[in-house]
Length: 376
Image 1 (cartoon, rainbow, N blue to C red):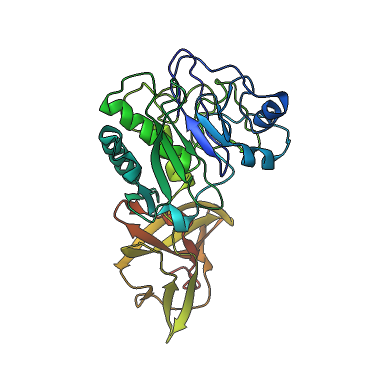
Image 2 (cartoon, rainbow, N blue to C red):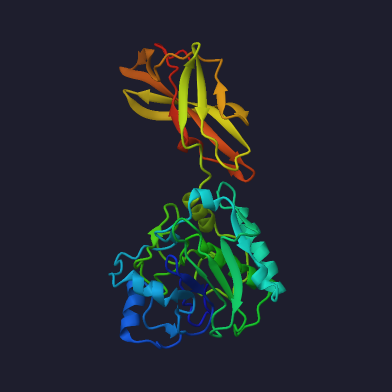
């Protein structure tokens, strides 16, 4: 996860490998040869902070990299652009997996303090409104949490997503050299779970990392320079206490894992009335159908109005208040100041979950109900 303030160095891991996070004073000197260091550097991590543990290396006190996977990554150049702040790896968790990630905490039975903190962390990630991230404790596991004894300056480490699946492993270091409170343990576990769904360190540039092969893709709407103030994904924070997600954490999660709308729609003519049908979304409790009216001036978009029509548990709705005309756009039968006024119509179907709904403007499609004169 991250390390103690003196070094504030930590990183995440490469796809499919285990990404370690720790909070400790300083990084260890390289214990491996130049070839290994070059492979680590190609992934975007600091080659001067490597600990060789035989089958794996621990990089920057926060990244666990399997040597086999490290070798398979090959010698690739790093990304000189170094995107900043809230950013994610190239590999993300698929929609089919992100909704109910099962986390096995039985490996922490000997560490009840960490186990309880992990349960709290699961609840925090699942509680972000308008995000599709849902984690539950259970098996068969998507993420297995266990213990290890490694460098004294490592609090915990985790793996990045691979193949559409979350990072498969989180390790808590029982040999961490600092005593931690419950709030500090929660902060670490939230941070590590963030790595498993693809979030890198928000301050990776300041920590001397580069994007590398793993990728560091900036998330629109989050800061673009400096540290993300208060972000749980800042590296070097293993001794921080949990204080909630920063606004940038929430924005990043909602942006990368939004609640999905139905993947397919259709509007058919049912005896002169529009019949709207859509594909079911796994886990959705209901669907809200809306009519969106877009206003145009001289053919250019001006604004829009969203009118919810119904909320239903079905996957179809017969819009008896409107006529199926086969036309979705029309021009008003008047103009003002030489400007031609018009409108076009679209339906939207939002999937509703206990923690939010899919964005209405991300789930819209043409509504063939317009008539000359735009009488609606």
